[in-house]
Image 1 (tube, one colour):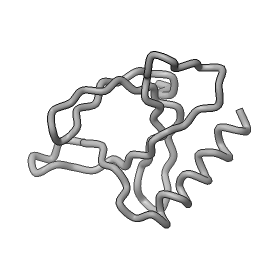
Image 2 (cartoon, rainbow, N blue to C red; image 1 turned 90 degrees about the horizontal axis):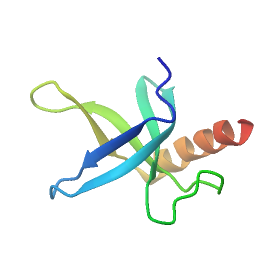
Image 3 (cartoon, helix red, strand yellow; image 1 turned 60 degrees about the vertical axis):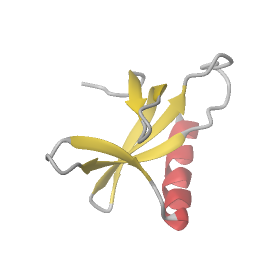
Image 4 (tube, rainbow, N blue to C red; image 1 turned 135 degrees about the vertical axis):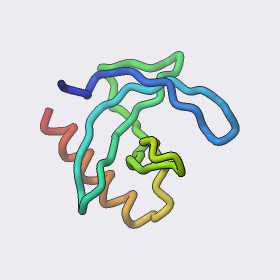
Amino acid sequence: MNEEGMFYTLVDDEGVETEFELLETLEFEGNKYFAMCELTEDYDEASEAVFDILRADRDADGEEILVTLEDEDLRQKIGELFTDMLNEE
């Protein structure tokens, strides 16, 4: 099943729900990363996407969760990989 183009409602630590579209996924150094575009009122699929990068992780109960990247160097590296992938499409 192709995950890209699917829509998700993510809930942050404060309980705020935000709608996202999954643009792309990739595996890097044993971790799975997600390029997610927040759906806003002025969202336009045809425009150049500004995306957030999230990493798959596990919570205390073993459930898969998505977490933001704290490491700026890693975020930049993964961002470049996603940008290259998205530009190829």
